[in-house]
Structures are given as C-alpha cells and as structure tokens.
Length: 469
Ligand code: SF4
Image 1 (cartoon, rainbow, N blue to C red):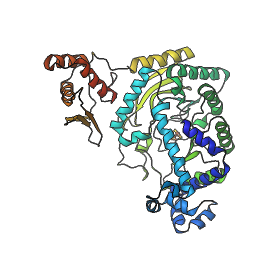
Image 2: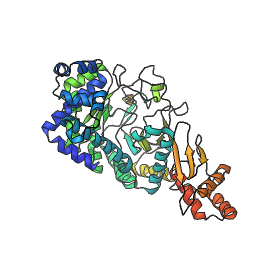
Image 3: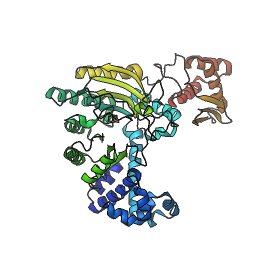
Image 4: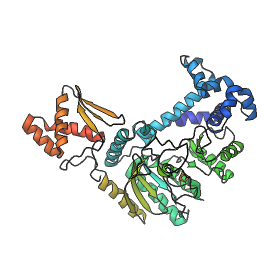
C-alpha cells in the first residue's frame, strides 16, 4: 500500500496527469453505466466525446474500452502503447496491488491466535468460494456507527435492516470511540486500522461520520475508505469530506450509483478530476455492467442483473469483528457461500455486548480466546470439512471439491508421499492428532513430528472444522 500511496500522491499533484486519467476513467464509466454510450463511442468517438464533454485520446480509449482493439495491440511492447493506455493500466495495476497488499499484509493481525484463525478462514474460503476469494480482503475488524441503513437497496447483499439508531458524536460517545480504537490497536495491532467505518450501514447516515473518521486517522494514521450510496444526498458534504479526507490520507473511495439519474447527477456535479480516486459502482439494472452478487436481498430480487447461476455469492469481506457502536455489540463473522442457512454469505459465529471501554477490552480479548485457538487442540477429534474429497496421488495427496477447487500436498525426501497418505487414511477413520500420531508410531514407526507437521499443513489449509463448528 505504501507504493500506491506514493504513486497516487505523486499523481495527485500533477494536474495534467489527473486530467488525462480522470477523463479516461469517465469514458470507461460511461461505457459500463450509460445505456447506448458504447455504441455511440464505437461508431464516432469524437462525436461521443463532444456530447459528453470529454477530453480524451480516441485511439487510447478504443484500446482501453473495446476488447477487439485491445487484442490488436496485445503483442505491442508496453512502452510503445499510447501514453493514456500506459498510464491507465499502471494506475489500475497499482490499485490491484493495493488490494493484494491489504489482504496479505495490512489486514493481518499482530495477535498470534487471531492471525492463525484468520489465515485458516482465508484458506477455507479459497476452497469454498474459489476465485471470488481473490476480491475479499478478510479485514480483521470493521466499525459500524449506526444500526441499520436508511437507503434500503432491494439488492443489499448484507440485507441491512431499517435505520434504527445513530451513534452521535457526543462528548461521552467520542471518548468511548477513541478508547475502542486505542484498545483495538493494542490487541489487533495496526491491522485494527485496515477496516472501514461502515458495513451493513450507510456511512453518511451518521451526521458526524466525518468526526469519527478524523479520530480514526489520529489513532491509525490512515483514513478509512468510504463507500457511500448517498453521494448525491448532500453534494457539498460529500465534496468537503473527500477533500478533508484526501488531505490527511489519499486513498480510493467509492460511490454506489443506484440509478441512471444518480449517475447523471454525479457526472454533472463532480468533475472527472474530482472522481479520479473515486470508483463508481454500477448498481442499477439498466447499467450494461451491473451485476449483483447473489447474496442477501439480491437472492429474492427479481432482476436480470442477479445471475441465478451464480449460486453461493457473498459480499462479505471480514474474517474477524464487526463493532457496532450504536448497539454496543461485537460480532465475530467470516465469509461463506450464501445459502438458505447463510443467506448473506457470512457466518455469524458469536455476538457479545459491551458497555464501557474496559468491557470492550475484555469482550474482544475473550472472543479471541474462546473462538480463535492458535492451533486446533491436539486431544480433540479432527473433523474434515464437508464437501471436500481427497485421493492419493503419485506425489502425495490431493483434496478437491466438485466445483473445481484442488489442493495438492507433495512428499519429499524428509516426508515421503506415503506418509501423507497414511495420515489421511487415519483421518478418514477419525481421531485426535495425538491418537493419529500414536497409532502411526506404533504401526508404521512413523515419527510423531512428521505426523504433526502434516496435520499442521492441513490445518493451515483450512481443511478442518473449527471447534465451534
Ligand atoms: S447496499 Fe449499502 S446502502 Fe444499500 S441497503 Fe445495503 S447497506 Fe444500505
């Protein structure tokens, strides 16, 4: 993330760079959200740019927006591509690198047991969600400043309820908030600041959202990213916040675009330059690229934008805690495939109340202790997850799911393939790590250290049920 911050920050001072990329981004937004724009642009790019007040290089934009044109330059060396193409691709690559860094570095808690538990959830999600998992950062903690949401989107992936309560920035609440952030930092480390200040809520429903995030910056040194579905509710407020937020810590924010009218309003009120670091999310069925994950209310939402073949979607991105300040609760959650049992694509593992800062500390630490063993207990039966098949291979063993997930473990000179297969055979019969190691020592003279090593690898791969499951 340091890199993206640097690159973004350098770009931020460069007016010509911002203008060029801002307008390129706007063309792509129109292609993905404005019905009929792509056709106009393909037939007459200059005419389309005039109509939409865009200052962009038509040749570059064709490469960026039209698949066949991109294909024509696939073999062209990067440095020979038009400048806008080079700059836009670099800009996007930085954003993707930033997301990867979030998942792999910034979201990793310093608390060893929390870190190990989160690692197991990330691995489990690769098996359960497949490639969808690459878009999930598995944030260790997020904060909600309201209870419920005023927007009521019919496709809401987290099925947020109606707005019931707002955590106002009173003296008392502000003190509790700062304590909560400080305690989180002590327990979770800097990863406690990798989350955001909304989840099943609309951030700007809170009239003092800004104040809370400035405190957040004071504790963690970063501004939490904002995604708002109410960017046009009070345009001056939105603009002021982006400006204030960017002054402290420049990052990519997001507006959910809920209708074509809203898109027009956003494009009329915000210049392409103002929106360079704001992603617009198409969330209305007329938008050519609109797609709703099949989770939460979208499971019941009758729209062509919900792909009914896309079963098991999720928009959940937390493997850890959701702290709701309005309700004074902490929820422990992790993503999963959406289903009748878990309609929002998220498992709620526990929910606890807290009143004071000290109760918050005890509750957070208690949840980690109760639900996040650093290692699974060696004296309790190990249970493989349902739906995972396994087979012996020449190299060792392979785990797989019907949907295509495959995970291979290969033997080597120190631990040959057969030992993986022997451990697996014992696992099939059931037993604890101690039972399995004892039996393999007795029957095959296998070093217990090897058995534990293999079981640890399976554990880290998220193949076993957690004790609470
Ligand atoms: S999608 Fe966001 S804004 Fe819409 S109802 Fe859900 S939480 Fe609220």
